[in-house]
Length: 324
Image (cartoon, rainbow, N blue to C red):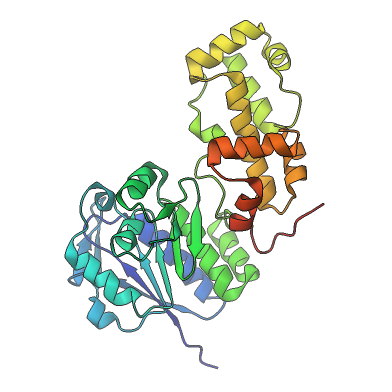
């Protein structure tokens, strides 16, 4: 039986980030080998060749008029979209395509195009963490999720930067064809099945600059390996074989923070992952080392501006099942 391809148009332009296009395209191509195929098109304001931000050219792009009806429109990103006004030609192209598509997505700063068109007004959206504040300030009616990998709100799906487009595409494949196909594609591409939408764009491990001293590096590795263990200041100092005062001095001089603040962020990262895996608030509090529901709620409010329950409702995978 002939299967009608799912038509996906990638909106590109001079200065587009190549991985915003190639990453999701490869995910969809691989999925099409296992299920209903995806027909992938490149669409640009004028058609023809488009120069990427790194130099190589994407050739053979179509105009919106030539692209026809698309099932999904995906607007790729590029730094210049966040740095200045979006040109009318690009806005017209996306407007023409999005109005007829069943699903509209953006990767990285592609969200600025959707926001400029008013398509994200009153909706939650994600973009690269470096541009989240600019997006929120420029478009106050958009509810920017500054730390999310990808966000679905109605027919609009927006993702964080660069490699997060792969996560977004895997989420679309799972939506179209189920988790088994998405899992097979992830195995083929040697990536995670998908980072859940609410997983942090950067964890405490990535956001903290590397420690210079061996004792501090070893201590941080031990805490990251088991955040729920006893990591009070005396215990951490003993593990690092230094005095509590000296440990605090090392954290200040090398990392610009305190042991307690860094530990809370590590444990919050762990709690987020437990919630995304389907665990209850109480289990996440204990499993992360934060201890009580109230302590967890305070940490969420302080760092994320939401509650654990709201976070799980927004981002937990539909496949996850809460545990007692």
